[in-house]
Length: 266
Image (cartoon, rainbow, N blue to C red):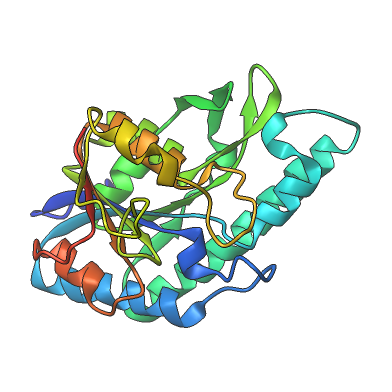
C-alpha cells in the first residue's frame, strides 16, 4: 500500500529553531523546554488555519557545541580521539532532537526525526550526497521531518560539523521551499548601533559584516550569525530572521502576517 498523500499540501516552508533560542548556551545540556513546546504549539495552530508543508530543523545550542569544541570535530580527524568525538557529538545533538520531536507529539503534530549523519556525505564541510526521497514522502504524507545540526562523514577531512543552515542549503535544492524562517532570541540581524537591519542582500552584506559575530560569549562551532546570513543568501529563497521569544511571532509569520525582523533576499 502506497503513502496516502495530503491533497492540499500548501506552502512549503523550512523553519529553524536556533540553538541559542531552545537551549541556554551558557549551561551545558540545558533545554528551554517551555520555549520548544510553545513553538510547536504555534506551528500546530498555524496548520489548523492554513495548509502548510513544513520541514523543521534546529541548532544544537548547549548540547553538541561543548563536545564539538572539546574534540575539535569541525576540523575533522585530528587525533586518536576524533572518532570518539564524532560519536559523542552526534549523541548530544540527537538528545536535543528527541526533546523537540516529543514536543511536536505533545502539540498534536506528527513529526519524525531525520538523522543527517546517517544519510549525508560532505566534502570540506559542504553536503554533496543525501538520498532525500524519504523526506519528500514524509512531506507528502503531511508529516513534519525534523532535521538538526549534526556530525557528517567528510571526503576531505574524515568528518565535519554540518549546521542546520548548511542542511537547509542542500535540501532547498531538492525540496524547493517558498521561504525559510530562522528563529533566534533577538529581533533580527542587528547593526553596529543595535538596530534591526530590515533587509540584507548580497549588495548590502558588506555594510553589516562587522556586526555579524557569535552570541552568548560561547563558542559556536557552526560560525554564528555570519554563517546564517551567508548560507541564507545561497538558498535562493526569501529568508526571515525573527525573534522566537515573542509569543505568537512564529504563528503570525507562518500565516503571512508581518512581525518585523530581518528579511534576507537572495
